[in-house]
Length: 281
Image (tube, rainbow, N blue to C red; front, side, top):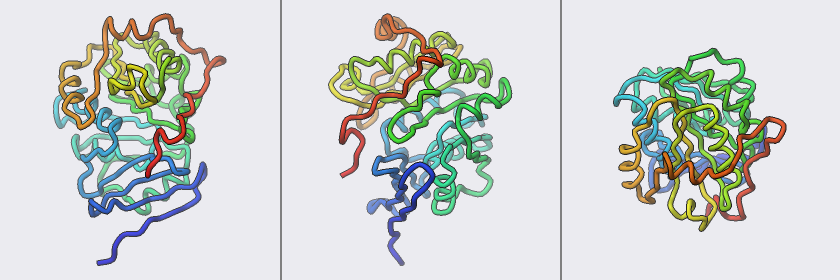
């Protein structure tokens, strides 16, 4: 049997590389310009290698009773890790994936094809443009994991964007986003303030070391109009190999402090990660 070999291709927004995992037979790491983007195990789609992906998975596990299909909108495609996860854990879900890099989508579909009948529709488009054209009340979950290089684009950080997300989500819907920042958390606080202006309930999931300002890292923002199952999220996040804290209520309001919602005209991308923050060996 031939060993899988790395695949490299110049895509629309950088140099993409698919690298096989020597420890898992049909698992692959996707990088773009050397930065890890996604990890996929084709034989075990419920295996979420990256910690932030696992936390997003915990939210997806708790937004509805186990196994119930969801209508999901994913902004940012990568290697389609979370769409594959939802297909496996909630069969019958209908999913739309919006990815600005059409070349990247083609590479992923060619080498890491989705299973037959996955119910996943792929769209090569700008996330904000696609969101603004999406129907009202059409999604149960909206997952935002959009990075231009290693930064969240400015037009996906504003009050106008949050308002579109609220419009597209159903009353019981949940918004979740992968963000990254470091102390003093100007970007993260502003994102929480922005979504607090449009959603009644907010939760933040991140490693204690990140929240204490010790290092740059990921944080998962969760927003909804109904109380989230923070007890279940806390249990799941605490059981991970790298445990995370779940902040909500008064503690989260204290964290937001005097941060203000971001207007479109004032929006800026997320901060540039320090060298080596998300690199691979």
